[in-house]
Image (cartoon, rainbow, N blue to C red; front, side, top):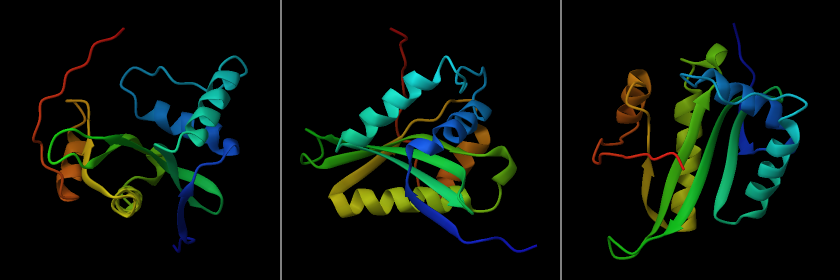
Length: 153
């Protein structure tokens, strides 16, 4: 079986239904759905992300079909010599496309963008029960160096 070329680039508004589907597949308790009621909210969020120079929504696509997504967020830092910091958020691959190296290519592309922009540190959070994801991140060179905390507001 041969595969078409994988392209990693900026997300487009038309990608949002598939992006939300992929995000939903990766959730323990699904909270993200694309439908008539939620579409305006997600479209507004996409426009806000696209307009923010400190955020990039990056997708991996094959034959115009989105197979993975990552949100790259930049934050000016006060510690570590005050470098620009980058964070990976919402790193998810479509369930049907996992195990093909798409995640590695997507993360590598995000890291390249972070380096190009001048970031000296890249971080991510992953839910404690995502054991396979943790193994993936370790294989990409990430260290489990911090303990994270969350509070719902």
